[in-house]
Image: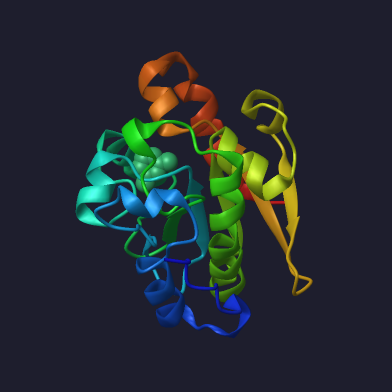
Length: 196
Ligand code: URA
């Protein structure tokens, strides 16, 4: 069967967008998922945190960053006095789990990133903390590595003409493998708090 056409996302409110994501068939990842993971956290939110894609736990529970990476993310946020309940909305570039947690493909990012852009337009966060290469490359339109993007404040210019400060840091899954980078990532959090 032909996939359902994507509606004009600009007309959808947050609940309609959530509904659209939960039934999305815009790419092949819909075939293997248990849940599409829309995102979760404070509404309205001062910050948005943008990760890569759901892993196994996230796919099971339908919530972002609920596995080991999520525990580390919560600790990082707590270090600057932020919680996902009160301050932060957490979402991913890709809403459905890639098989075996493989990297997302360019066509999957292209199919899914309009949802993230609409989330940003609706949530109007004061800051976006971007975790890892795929999220940074998607939001900043670059193929630079995280190491060269972190340490300064970037600007995301939305279609509505808003300018949102963006801070890039390492993905928590990377920090779990390379704990010596944690100090840099804590610095990035403080930069995000201090702002532009
Ligand atoms: N890693 C991500 O990038 N996102 C999640 O939601 C969980 C792990």
